[in-house]
Length: 303
DNA sequence: AAAACAGACAACCGCTCATGA
DNA sequence: CTCATGAGCGGTTGTCTGTTT
Image (cartoon, rainbow, N blue to C red):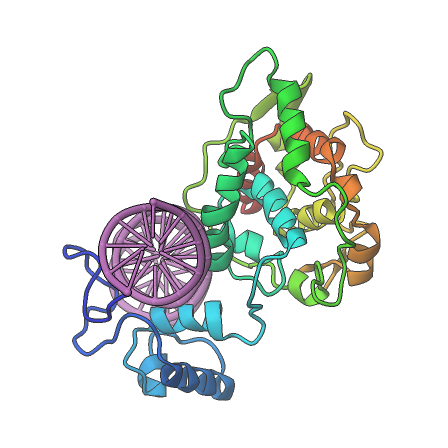
């Protein structure tokens, strides 16, 4: 890991430039101190936490260590194939919104997913001829792009044609607890410019019409629906029925976060249903631009 | 056995947003 | 309304580790 004594970039001003603040990898002793303190006092007040806990770290570093490594809910180990598939689908919808994606994958952190994407999935997509940023075929040939696109989408979204059952003891897909972890403050910087009207496959989608009334819960519900594969079933070439609460498949918890019942996730999720038909029709209906979709939701959430 | 290389991932950094004074 | 502060996010860096030459 990093050498604690060395700074990665000489000219940058670190957040914790104070003398005596330790950097670099955490020791088991530091982990224990931090864990014990947070278990005792709870999370939050990160800026002052190091001093109160007796750690020579900056608050940011403590928060990161806790969130990405020490939290009891953090799941260690390899990314399972079903998790990978979910990451792929969510990335298609959301782009590099790692925190948002992580919020949908139990026990995984944004950092972990980001690392996995950069080291595994992006390369995997490239090897399949897919642009990992746009999820569209590389070297687009306008004449055959759609067909090729569909083909690649099908193969990328489900690399294994006969996957094992998704819901297992080891890999719960979306727990109700996880569903309630939907971030309350989705990051909003770096949002793309939104085309108000997207024309694709003969449809005109106006975000004012379709997303103008959406709020965060709606977006969350919508994601849940996509994950649970219950929005576009039997909807070929129809505009998506963006769930306007109350959505029949979403239980809104007391914290106003939609909850996907595990049984629902279990029973309704089926790899075959997530084949090209579903995903492609979804994205076609949405203009096949996950960033625009997500941005549209975010953009109008506050209006 | 040693060096070179590549992959994995923990950690850092700067930026943005939310909130309260 | 403005400013300061805290928190969270995504991009990037740097080190460790395993593999290849």
